[in-house]
Structure formats: C-alpha cells, structure tokens
Image (cartoon, rainbow, N blue to C red):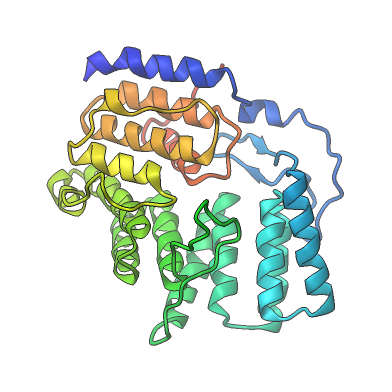
Length: 324
C-alpha cells in the first residue's frame, strides 16, 4: 500500500487550503450569550482538548429557524418542539438544542423522538455516554411500535426522505457505541438499523459501519459479507460517500479511483474516513493516520466522519496530531 501515500499526501495538501483547524477556533471571541445550563459560548471540547465553535449559519437557515421558533411559540406541542430543536442545531447552537429537547422530555416524558434527537446532539458535543443512555432508552420505547419514514430537516435534491424513525435511533446508537469503543454493541445496533429499511441509502450507510468495525476487529471476511453485494448501480440519493466506501471495500473501486473534493464538507469527511479505514485495514496505518489528521484539521467538527477520525487518532494512535 505504500504506493498510495503520494496520493494521500496530495489530498492532504489540497484540502489544507480550505481548512480552519480546531486549534484556531478557540481564538474566536465569545460574542454569543450563554445558553441556559451551558456557561460557555463554545459548543464542545474535542478529544484533544480544543474548544469547538460553530460557524455562522446561512441566511436561509436563520430564516427557517425563525419560522420554527414562531411556530413553537404559538403552539409548543411535541412536533414543534422537535422541529425547533432540529433547526436550532442546524444554526450551530447544539447546546441550546439539547436544552430544548431536555425541556421537551419534561413535558413529554418517554418520547422516543426527543431522545433520538437529543442523543444525536450528545454525539455532536462528544458526550457519548449520554448519547448511549438516550438512544438505548429510545430503542426500548419503540419496541412493538410502527416504524415510519422520518421527514428530513434539510431535504435532499430529490426531496425524498431516505431514513426511518427506528432506523435513525439504531444508526445513532451504533455510532455512539462505536465512538465509545463498544464494538460488538455497535455492530448489533447497525444490524438492527439495516433491518429497518431496504432503502439503498440506509443499506450503504449501515453496511459501511458494519464493515468498518468488523475489519478493525480483525474480522475482515465477516465485514465483507455485508458489502459484497453492493454495486455502483444502487439508487443512492444522499449517501454517495458511503456507497463509494462500500465499493472500495468490496474491490469494485481502487483507492486511486476515489475522487475527494477539498471542500471541508461532511460528505468529504465521510469519504476520507472510508478511505482511511480501508488503508488501516490493509495494514497501512501511516497513510490512514495522515488521512485522519487531514479530516480533523477541518472545521466540519460536527460531522460523523470528523468525530470518528478524532476518536481514532486519540485511541488507535494515542498521540495528538500535528496540525498545520
């Protein structure tokens, strides 16, 4: 695999042109008023001790947030609580979103949807134990309940939702266990996610993580069983990065065929993480580490690819990366 290192270095150098490192984020001024229950203006602390701040939201997101806020103020029912929480998070105010869900749970106790969304945002702010607690409880509450398609907060280009309520609970639970190092529990959750929907987007996302975890546990052939049937003609709408990762894992694509745009987006981080995982499983830990460092140098710190790379660097390599 050493012949792929020049390609990896090229990716690293290209994406470095648009990166805003986590280390630099702690230089931002505390210009926002603290949220109730959270006395800081940063949203989280990385696994390397860096304070993480959100970038200003777009005008479109702000307008949508204001509309959800007005709807909530007129009628603070369950649906409006969830939607306000979701759009609060989209503006980058993750702690405020968590507070909204917490207040919602006081009014609507044992509501799996509130637990699902709060669990997601606990993942964002690196509080994995709290995420597991919420999502495990949500998984218990949905037993015997009807599974429904979950409407997207930020619709895809085709405006077709690609995930279900139950699937999202198990998906985020799998991530929480993986990030915490509970590999078998993570696999079990992702398997349950896989069973919630045959939707191609769900298949490639869940299969990617099942392969990833099995491969890192030394069970590459077991993981391969979940990606071997995935082909390039699957009608994937959103999760193209996970599709490409699965095609890399099953040999349909080679590392040199993976095209990564240096745009610092969540999609970019997901694809880079898949490539890094492939290299790590092939025994090229040096190239994998370089990719993970590339990911965590970016400012899309709320994306799952970024969080996973951060955790991997902190645990599998046990040394803080040197960020340029």
